[in-house]
Length: 97
Image 1 (cartoon, helix red, strand yellow):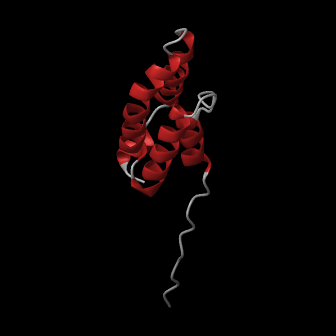
Image 2 (image 1 turned 120 degrees about the vertical axis):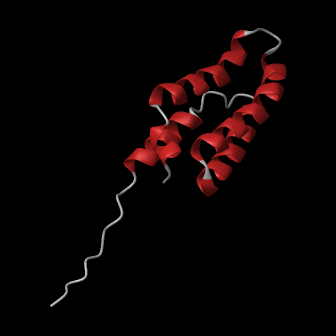
């Protein structure tokens, strides 16, 4: 995990999810707003998390934003928790005699 991925804040992720959900607050323009927001959100997701997880998550985020009724999924926040809750890699020690 690089420095950018570890420095992503929970507040930023929650705000990104709120922006994605906010398109439903504008009557009749919600789905049009999603068409504009979906590619922007996917790109931000990829740039925020990087690697294959960022690419897969960005694609998922793109589809989630375009599909009616799925904006409630907090994909940025879920990925933030996934990054912090993963098990640390075990360090193998070599015993020298």
